[in-house]
Structure formats: C-alpha cells, structure tokens
Image 1 (tube, helix red, strand yellow):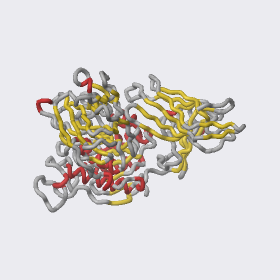
Image 2 (cartoon, one colour):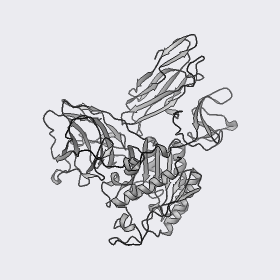
Image 3 (cartoon, helix red, strand yellow):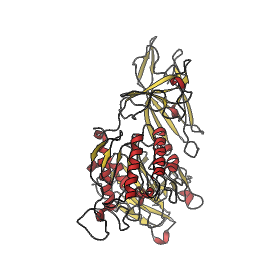
Image 4 (cartoon, helix red, strand yellow):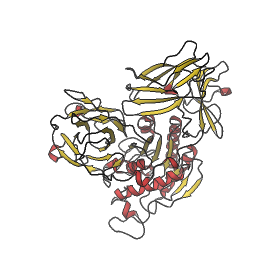
Amino acid sequence: MTIPAGIKAVRVTGRFRRPDGTPYKGSVVFQAPVMIELEQALTIISGRATVDLDEQGEFSLLLVATDNPGMDPTGWVYTVTVVLDDGTTRTGSVTLSSTVTEIDITKLMPADPAQLNYVPVKGERGASILSGAARPTAANGTVGDFWIDSTKTDAWLLYGPKTADGWPQASLPLGPVTTWRVRDLPDPAVADAVYAGPAPTITTAQTSTPAAGNIKYAPDPVALSGTDRRGTFTWAGAGNFAIGVGTPDNTYVLPLSRYPNTYASGQANWSVEFGTDAQVIQLRFKHISAATTFRLSIDGRKLTDLMQPSGGVVAGIGLTHLLTIDFGSAIPRRLRFDFTAMPFGGIYLPPTANMWQVPLQGGRFMVLGDSLSDGSAFNTGAGCGTWVDRVGRMLGCTDVWREARGSTGYVATGTFAAFGTRAEVDVIPWEPDRLIIWGGYNDASSNQSQIAAAAATLFDRIRTALPRCQVYVIGCWSPTGTAAASHVNTTATLRTAAANARFPFISPQTGQVYDANGTLVATHGPWITGSGNAGSLKADGNADLYVGSDGVHATDAGHVYIARRIMAFLRTVTPA
C-alpha cells in the first residue's frame, strides 16, 4: 500500500518466538477497506498488505494511521491475521493512532468491534492487567505497560509511549464487556455426530515404500529429498513440532508443547488437518505399541466415535508403516487425523492429486488437568479418547489442546509437575481462547491452605497473562456418590479461589454451578451416584456404568457422560 507525502503513518513491528525462544516462520496480513479517501482529494486504493517474518521471527511495516484528518470512511480498523508455521492462525482488529510513530503489534490486545467476544475486565483506572507492575501514583501509565480504565459496561486498553502528563498517547476501545454466547455454539448432536458418508477402505502395512509414482508431502522440519514436497499441514492440539535424533526418528515429527516438552517423552495426543482431492492417500507413521491409535474425520465428521488401532504389526514396533486409505472417489475433502503415540512422517499422494491447507475453527480450546483429562487404561485412545475432544467438538472448536498429566494437581506433582509450573510452558505461551482447569483429586490429601495458595497463584497468573481467555474451573472429582471429606474440602477451597479470580465454577459432587461473581446460579445434581462396586450393575446409582474397576477413572461411556455434564455447565454460565 502506497502512502502519499503528508499522510500520517505508523510503523508497525512485531516479534514472534516459540516458548523455547526460537523464531517462528510465517506472515502477517493487514486488511483495510478497499478505498480510503483523505483530505486534499487524495485517494488510497488499499486493501491488503502482507509482510513475511524474517529469520528472527520479526517484521516491520509502515501503515496509514486510522485517524488521519479528513479521512473517509472514519472509524475503520485494520483486520490483522497472523499465520505461523505451527498452524496457528490469529485474527483481530487494531486502530493505529497518528499520535504515535511506532507500535509493537505483539504487545497489543486485538479488538474486533464486529464481534462482541471481549474479555470481562475487573479493576480500577490504572490497574495493570499484563505487566504485573505495582500501580503507579496519580494513575499514570508506564512505558511499555498495559493499563485498563474500566467501568461497568466498557473497557479501554491504553498503551505507550507516555505523553507529557504521563498518560499513554494512544488508546484502543475493547468494547462492551461480554463473552462467548450460547447462540454461537453448534448443535451438539450434529457437532459430535459420526460421518454418514460411504466408509473408506483402510489398510496398514509394515513398509516404507509407497505406491508407485506417489509423491511424499513431508511435514516441516523433515528434510526433503527427490520428488518430496512440503506438506501444507495444519497442526491442532499442539505446537513446536520437531524431529527426533537418528534413523528413523529424524523422518517423523512430534510436538514439544506439553510437559516435559521433549521428543522422547512429550505429547502423545495431537491432530493434523489438510485438504486433498485424492481418492487414495497413504499416511506414513512409526508404530510404537498397541497404544498407537488414530481417528479419521472427513469434512468435519469423525469416521468412528472412538480411536482405532493403527494396525501396526507387533514385529514392526519402532518401524515405518503406511496407512492406506481409499475413499472410493477423487473429490475434494477436508481430512483430520487425531493421533495417540503415532509419530507422523507425512502423506503420500498420487501425482495427479493436490493438497492444500485448511484453517482451524472455533478458537483454541485447552484443558489443564490430570488423568481424568489425559486418559487412563480404562478408556480407549488415551487423551484423544477422553471427554476433552468431545467437548471441543460440541463447542465447535477444532483446535483442542489436552495439556493434562496424570497424578498432578495444584500442589501434586506426580512424576511430572504441578499445574502452576506447567501453565507457564504448556498453557500461557499458546494463548487459548477457552481454558478449563480441572484438578484437585490428587491434591485432596494435602493441606487445604497449600491448595488454596497454589490455586490463587495459578488463577491470578492465568487471569493476568491471558486476559482474553474464557476460563472455567471444575472442582474435585468424586468417583462415587459419597465423596470423601478431603474431596469435599478441596472443592470448597477451589470454589473460593475461582470466585476470587472471577472464574465460573462447578462442583461434580453436587452439580452446583457458580458464575464469575461466585453466585450460585444452578444445581444440576451430582455427576456420579451410587457405591461404584465394579462388576455389578446396581440400582443405586451410575458409578458402575461410568467408572472403571479401579474405582477412580472414567470408562469410554463415562467420558461421553462427563462431556455432556461439562457442556451443561458451560451453557449455564454462557450468555444466551
């Protein structure tokens, strides 16, 4: 976009780094109205400006300020779309005030005046929501800090540098304080439905040799050779993909975005999406064990309700396999694979077929939790087989992150780390739009004051670092109708902490639902009832239907049930 002399402009910069500090690849797109008229009969034919990130993950671009004198139309904003090489796509809107000369876009909170999905803001004029610094005297801003000026109905984001009187030079209206709405959610029966079209034929073979003439579409950063092409894959549920060391791991990718954030012992559950018009595709994967499973979705509908075995042979554990899928016809399709313990080596397509990138939908949905969210031996498909994926589908979210680890909690570390430690690496840098925090069962034997302190610290950190994220808290799980006293006490502790942080809360023990103000707004009844004596179908409750023989973890049927109870909670605390 050309900027005539005399027109006020703002230099927009940005820097995009992964949690480990390495730079992203990608681009930033600024979309303006097609025609903007300025005074002196100057007309800018604008539209779109695109800039690629450099080797440091940075960019710099000069853009017309949105408040130039005599501008027609007035009140317009730039629509900003950030596309990163881990599949992340973020879209928002920003104004550029002529009172500043340079703005760092990565330090702004995008606001879209056409979408009333802004974060509720609680605080006084001058209260810091991002910097963590002490409130300055005379309510003056500090260079580089973000400050909120909020009332009951509106909020403004103020950003530096300061003027002579100490106030930031520019402000960005965040609009009415509201949240996601029930009317935006898909019909749960449709969203969680099984694919109704013709079922493809799926076979597995222990081989690294594709069908004759097929072209390999390899994921980044797997090295290309011969006729290989770079696959246009969209990652979901994970980020920071890397290859392993040595053969064959250097030809497979796994994400490093879940604690302990390593290739060898990191994240087993994640997803990939892409579009293709091929009749037959071949998926290259490494067979790990009997736990190597997948679920295929076609055009947004899962082919099977549960995860399916990869079909890898026992003798081929650790070796390359090809999953061949014949759809019966060569038409455009959107494909999705959910993986558990299944390192991904790319897709082979016939030379006449095409592949293209598809966007994710519904925002980023994330869960910070324990084995009730990460999966156990009592459900199929580990974390991809829990309530998490099902709730994600019913929310209309295709980017579902399962940041859960068994035996952990607010203070319990198990063999990993407590919630507070993992949130800094597994949650905050990945900026979820919706976050459910469910834990407490593994903490119940701890001191309640320790649980309270850990929960308060975590909630405050999440609220401060992720101001636009909608956060929900679930109390301590009870696998029987009669909860232990320690579990009841832990739920009470977490409810108080959630109310202080203004996070909606539900108790699985009673079904009591509390809104962001800590007010009891509904009682749905206890989730689990009965004694839970495994192996006998008792008339006194549902524990035998939904809880495994260990008396703790949910079965496949239990996760279906839990997903419905959690969705009822979310709908209750979400405006119509």
